[in-house]
Structures are given as structure tokens and as C-alpha cells.
Picture 1 (spheres, rainbow, N blue to C red):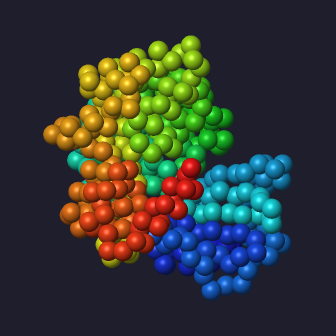
Picture 2: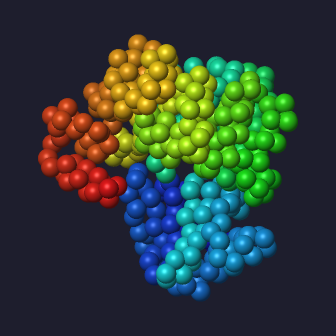
Length: 367
């Protein structure tokens, strides 16, 4: 058994989402959003390098020694799966292990808005799941793929970095391909997938212009494309898509968004009232004629008003979703306050100034 498995086993027993290992500090666990140290000595550089070396393949070790960060999935001796990032910093090696649940969660278990299930019923177009790092985008997409896998007879090609949840083919065939293991880039993966008779293509991240181009092409040519972006609202997602390509392709991109984008789900993870867990809260934008016109006329700043009035079809702003979750006693009001855009309606739910201070600090860090 690799020595690092002991820390991972402890983290799993505590129910943490991530295990952090770095030189000069003890191992740390992320529990419900908070990073907490375990009772262990500060890790020495040679010690941590030895731990990491035990789980790297020869090619990964060579890549790491050349100065590159490496991302990969790791299966511990007890069968637990982790998404791993190994890197170097000023004091030496560092590593972060993200826990991957053994079972793919259902859409129902994640308490996602009912409209997310309906987004899976489309046969072509693009659906984007967005949010900051660590907000559960991969989990939401895995639940969507599992729903398709159980309810429709499809060929689903999933391009990931790295493979996290393992999908067993049910009604559908699910083909999972890993970046740098099975394909050199997401763009190459999408291009190849289009020759593999796909019905659904999941793109782990729309991270560069080539990937965006090929994903758009796939969505326009009769495929359902699911993808992610590290954006924190529907408006920022649209702006990122337009800005991802050169200026001469701007009008073409706006036309694509207005005609082939199905919807954008942006999520945050907010603590539950008992502070023992976190729940996904989602902003939802569904493409319609009014929003399409705003995109084509460069008036995306007016889209939030469309979300506010589109509740009957499943749309909602993040603030609306947060307030509804507070009123349903599903989230902690002080934590929800931190994620709100217009904080005034939330002040009545705040017991003291702690949340206000946290929000100020968070916004200052973002700026």
C-alpha cells in the first residue's frame, strides 16, 4: 500500500472533499468548504516527494521532473478514486487529492432544479455548466450523463481531464477518454469524437479557442454537447464564449449562441443550516428569442432581467435561487449572503456582521 493512502483513508473517513499535502505544514482536509489541519507533523520535502513518487507512473514522473504540473486519477488500494494535481512551489512539492464518490450521484440526490433534467432531453445544441473551481460542476455533469445513460439509447463520448466518475454502460454506450492518456487535447478529442457516431459529447473544459470552435461545430451538426467553463454567471459565460475567439469570428460566435446554445447552469456550493454539508444552488439561463436578440445586439448586461421574469419556464438568477433556498431552510443564510450579488434582500436573514465581513473579504480577493 502506498504510504499516501493512509492520509486519503483518513480524509474519506472524515467525509472531506479534498486532501492537501504541502511541504512545511501538516496534511490538511477540506471539510464543508473549510481547510483544516490534521494532527500530524509538518511534512518535510524529501518525505512528501517520496509519498508522491510512489503513485506516479514512469511517464508522469518524467513529465513532473521536467517542471510540469500533472493531473491524473488515482485509485487507492481500497478502491477509492481521487482526482490528483501534483505541483511544485517555493518550498517544494505539493499535491491535492479530490475525493470522487464511488457511485455516480443522481440528479435527484443533488437537489438540482428540475429544469436540469429537461436539458438532458435535447438532441442537439450546447448546454454549459459553469462555476468557480470546486463548485461541483463535474458532479452535476456526471449526474446528467448518468441520467442519459439510464433513460436513452445513445453513444456518449466523454472527454475528461482526468476521468473522475466511472460510468458503466446501461441503456447507452459511454466512452470515456482522458486528456494526455487517450487524446492530446480537448480539441483533438472533439474532432475525433465527431467521427465516432456520437449522440452526446461531453467536453471537460472549453479552455481554448480550438476547443470552443470544435464544440460549436459539434453542437451545430446534430450533437448534444455538454461543457464547462470557469465563469460565475450566465452573462460572464456568454462574454467568455464570445471573447474566446478572434474578433473576426465574433459575429459568428454570437449567432451560434443565439441559435444553438440551449442553456447555462451556473452553480455555487452553500453550507446547509447545520453547517455539516453543502448544497448546490444554481442560476439558470435558457435561450429564447429575447435573450438571443440581446446577445446579437451586445446587450448581454440586460439578460439578468430576463432571468428574473423567466421563472415560469425554469430560469432564475443566483440571488433568486439563494433567497428561495434560505426560505426553504436548505442553506445557511450567512453563507448565502456571501454569494449574493445584491445583498440588501439578504440582510434581514443575517444574525450578525460576520457574513458581511466575509463577503467584503471575498470580494476584495476577487478584485
